[in-house]
Amino acid sequence: MEFTPEIKDKLDKLQEKYAAMGQDMAAYLDGLLYADFLTYWDYIHLDTLLSLQSPKTPFPDEEIFIMYHQITELYFKLSLHECKQIAEHPALTAEFFANRVKRINAYFNALVSSFEVMVNGMEKEQFLKFRMSLLPASGFQSGQYRMIEICATDFMRLIDKSRREELANATTEEKFEHIYWKFGATELASGKQTLTLKQFIAKYADQFLQLIKEREQTNFAALYHRLLDEGQDVSLLAEELKKLDLFVNVEWPLSHYKSAVRYLERDPVDIAATGGTNWQKYLPPRFQKRIFYPFLWTETQVEEWGKSWVLSVLKTLHT
Ligand code: HEM
Image (tube, rainbow, N blue to C red; front, side, top):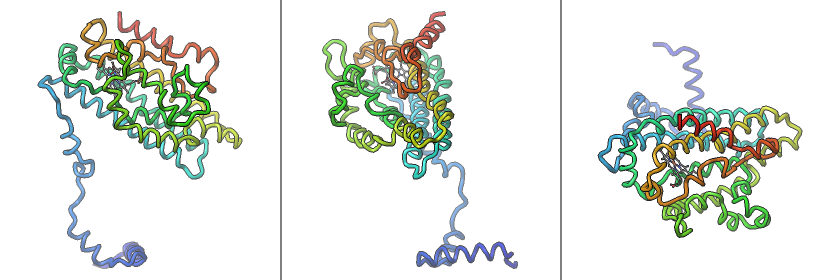
């Protein structure tokens, strides 16, 4: 069979490519000859993926709990993948930034609408039993969730509200001592850090501190202000950032809170199942008022943060 001019052209280009690296094209062609055709299951490592669910108890619903956490972590990974591309873009434009935040919003939208898998997808009796075998592990220990926050906003916004002023000129390490979530994992009775928190900090503190420093000038809030100062049209970007603020700080926390209410409310044993944290006071967005971009909201919106949503969620729960 004669080679077409297109094939000859491709062979010439391949030859050039390998020669540039001092490689022998013929050897690589041999490799092609013997290589297997790619399959779907190998490409996405399907067997490995499906082997990663190892329940600790015989309750069938525990697998749902594991898989939904894994699904969530993959969406978090997708979000961080976009955060990195935005932060490290060599010539960032408002258009690129807005389009990539839009992707993150799509991921969170999927997470918010799928949380039903947790809220009504498991038998409460099973959950309350298998949960005790998982202590002191908690979704609270999701490092990726915290990394998304670090990428999304000025680090000061993640510091406990009451300490922000006095820490204005503090070092990153000093500020990190007062990051808001440390207060979500403090034992009700003693005021001491829970084991859940201690283990989380031991594993991730160095990674968090490094990321906080890396994102000092390249978190989304800083980048937004930079583009604004450059005179770029940031109107679409502002809309996407507002959606992100609502997804991460109101809608996802509320979907999640709904699960906590459904499975843990009322029963005194529940407090033990959460490692003794005061989750009723900690989880609702209207108490936390975590806001990435206060400069994009009106004073009233900041004031009313999370309130109407909380009320409507609670209403659907009790009817
Ligand atoms: C039935 C389902 C769930 C229940 C009952 C539940 C319960 C809780 C509770 C009580 C807390 C407060 C901290 C603690 O006491 O451990 C918490 C925190 C947290 N959980 Fe869940 N959770 C559920 C599902 C999930 C899922 C699927 C994820 C996904 C990764 C997740 C991620 C988190 C995160 C990130 C926090 C920290 C929230 C914050 O700091 O505001 N949870 N969860």
